[in-house]
Length: 319
Image (cartoon, rainbow, N blue to C red; front, top):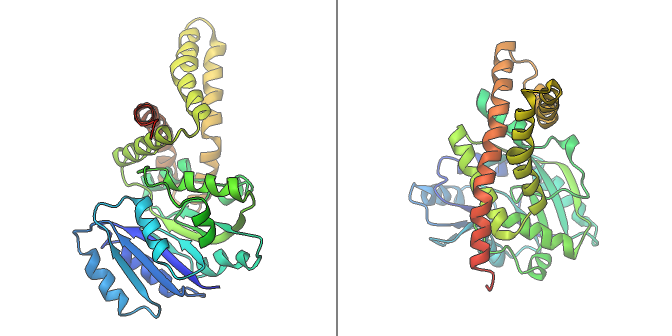
């Protein structure tokens, strides 16, 4: 099989060397790489030119100023000569066995898609807490339901063609819609938990809030997870205020609130224990203190972003 690695970039000059160096270290190198540049102004093009002379495989760069991520991926896949596409992102670095493990299940002609995995690459206490709060551990994953990120996924080019590619009308959550279309066509995905991409979480609460606002706006545009968002609104706007009001008369309401908080944070704290093993206790405590604020910020950002996306969807429903 011939494998093409694809990704999109925009102003990633600082991050590209880490990705490309990790690709140079692969036990199974790609047969070619295609990168779409959405209009970088920071020296990304110079970095790509320098690596094009170093890497032992063809490296094609497509200049597409203004292209969103979905359009950029589609352009890269369209230009690929490989029959298998391995997708990743500029802001990651890849384990040396990433590509070999990711495409190995495709030796089965009955498989069209393989889900890789991704883990946080945090710098400092806040980013560690953020990774533990928002990202699954491998043991949390149910492979039959897992929706892969396009930072670590492989698929046959004909499967991409069959579902119409990535949805270019979406600026966020485009890989979720693409994955759901693939699952509708071929419900069985391969699972490669050792094909790991490491990526850095957002470095501040403000940046994280913006990220989750945009993700939720994308959910609203695409009509994704309406029940999940409804539960969030009900929890914060109905159940929590009601329990707070009852708490002044019935102590049991405070207990219910505490149990709800434990239920929300139990799994993230379990992940944090694993991520901070060997840390000083003061640093572990500082990370633990961040987690309720991170969860609250993320939920509020989603509640603000989702209706904006729904309003956009209603305005564009004829399209």
